[in-house]
Length: 313
Ligand code: TUI
Figure 1: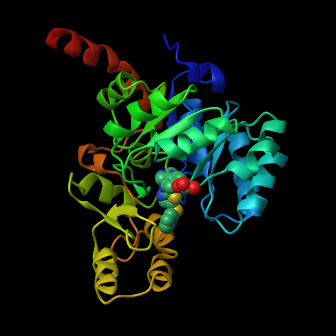
Figure 2 (figure 1 turned 90 degrees about the vertical axis):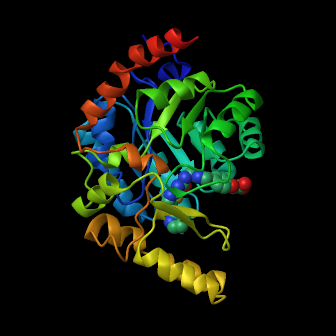
Figure 3 (figure 1 turned 60 degrees about the horizontal axis):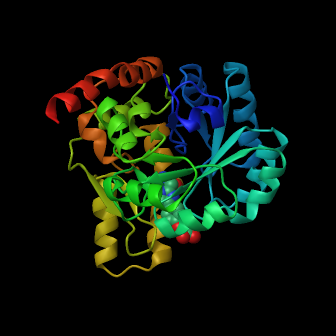
């Protein structure tokens, strides 16, 4: 059924990647997504290299399918983490929040597929020239660290600008989003928030409950002034952060205030003082189900969406 170039490139059944989300995308979620026919990824976030190595080794015990690692380029351990990925011969890496250019030659040498996340046409073009294998184009609907362009505007512009597979991310959680992404020219999708609201995801139950409770306008973007915009649920923490911004706090003070907040939310379940990252599609997510059911519901729902389109045009 899937002739997507991405399935051949990555050796996966369905062109569905799981977002490599720090503190929630562990071996359990990555293995579940890969076992269900997508591409699961460990979110390395700010993980020290030895912790990542253990997580990779754990994933290998949970699945014999391909999986990947998402590397946060703002991590202080980025160089060491890249070395772990190389040592462990991880098949695919995605990168977030920066330009992975300096690491590309070493990864290409061992055949690791490199798929950076970009939020602009300019960066996509630059990365294609230095040999990346595909591009994840992430709209500002996404959770966590984001760019400025919406998925609807970003995907077709990146598709027109590059000659490698484009994966759409931001605001996708069901068959409609999947078909829409392909209509815009993408070869596949990356899904984050929907996979956090799964049985297999180890995120704290309060975090999952916050996704189910959230509506379309529940998220805000903090950090625009510091140059690190992050989409999170509006809560006590974001109100305190905004108050500090109004008082004229420095970028360093503001960044320091945000440090460690994602772990508090995702692992300790403090959804008032923590940074509860999620995408704007959260308003549509109303149940916790297995990763396999999430993927099968998306794939199984495609014919109905296509029939609906055919009846309309
Ligand atoms: O990276 C993400 N999402 C993330 S990372 C993260 S951890 C974090 N914690 C606190 C503050 C900030 C981050 C949480 N969520 N998504 C991928 C992504 N990358 N979205 C946008 C970008 C991006 C933005 C600008 C990539 C490159 C870029 O410009 C780099 C350049 O050189 O132009």
